[in-house]
Length: 234
Picture 1 (cartoon, rainbow, N blue to C red):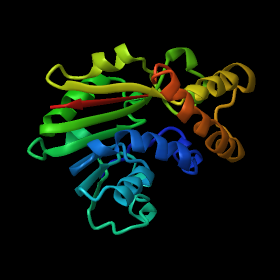
Picture 2: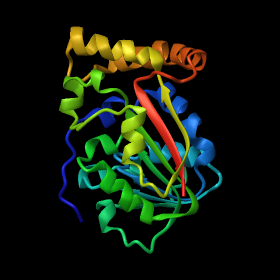
Picture 3: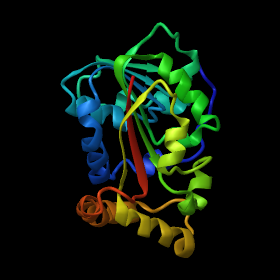
Picture 4: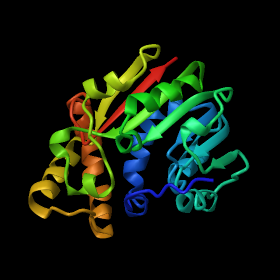
């Protein structure tokens, strides 16, 4: 077992952002298949999203170092959870003989000081032909009191994320999501200065900003956004 304690409460705050979750999920879903390793599974909201939508998934190993979060994962799955194994540990505790078709980090590596070291460990668990999928907050100029409150070391641009990836992996796609969200983040950083948004603000963002971003992102060819997605193949 692990005694690590997660800093921040955004997992609970953002769990109702269903449009946003569907948006980023749909952008990566075709690369999720087979045996899946989810690193930093939190309270299992994304685990549930995978199970609800991916028929090609045989199994999911969900790693979460914070026991209080790990204990919630199976309870937050609304479909058959028999494919899920929850491990209260870190990636480095996992035997390297365990290999996966898909390894996913959703809003995780910004919490890890040695991000490249972490991803080099992840590479060892990836099957030949498997996919590494990463979603991170974008652009350090958006770094705010919220980032500090939830324990972020950094936000990323394309170059920073690419530099953290092991050389042995081939880049398939890297793109930004939620262009209008950049404006919302700037308002929070310079005007509201909130460590956490309210539930009302999250729902307004999810219902108003995300649908517009989905259109704008296509018009600007995913060149700007408050989040960055990268997909690599071994």
